[in-house]
Image (tube, rainbow, N blue to C red):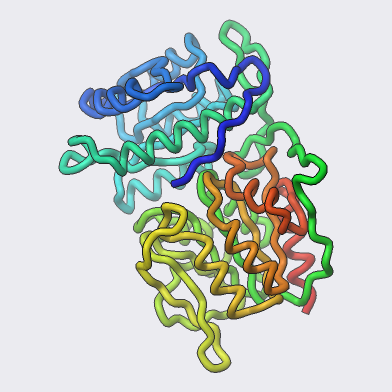
Length: 388
């Protein structure tokens, strides 16, 4: 996935300081693999490497850590037990859960993100990644760098008996608001056109997206909005199945993975399945979902851009698009297509984004009607969606 450009650090951190990482895994083989990858990279430093959650708590008390790579299944104290304890010590800590690509691993990872983890990564496998797989390396480094840079933008305060730590106030979604978004004159030109009545709502998200989706859809509960909601969240297969189940549980929506040829109906949430682009086509008087395995866009499949381009073509100006937290710029070109067709685009602000890559891209492209903190997004959409 494409990364954000580096930003200067805030507070006690410096843009020249290495991102400090703690590895927490009971497998010495996995720790050794990750250590070799990280030690070969400039700007990243392994500050601690431990074998269980209890040791991680002790190490965090002694070291200044930016990002934790946290295994789920470990002896003494597992990752899900350790996670809230780590965040209690340091609420601004960026935690990446490491899980298997199984239904159980996906479910636990999403529960961890509800509890405040920033992201997840699939555990390296013996058949591919432990032999030096390029995909695992690229994903690992991309997430560590993006989350480490986001961490550095947090204001920091002294932690009693320990190194400085970010000040954070947690929202209902477990996302830590940070400094308010700084919009410089001429950088962003917010659109003020009066939106048309809405026939569809489209959402794109990536890093930190599950937490943001739970917050938005948990507020915009089933029955309060009657349009269909189409979501592309950067996730592998299996994880999108569990994401749909979690959204149904927290919001009451009928959330499901989209199926090829399915007629889109109001009052439902459709999620792009992992490894498939989800697009819309018009068939008579119906709007129909289509799944395809066209090449990745923005290094992603599913990707937000193809979904938005197709929605703009199918629905024209009767579209609301929301770009939530995530790395890279996926959704920017699609957002431009939505606006060119007369639709409306909004973005999550920097202060409540885990990573302000995707929403920052559409904001600075000048296509947004609003750049909003996470708690204000659902009320804004509900107000516009009520116009029939």
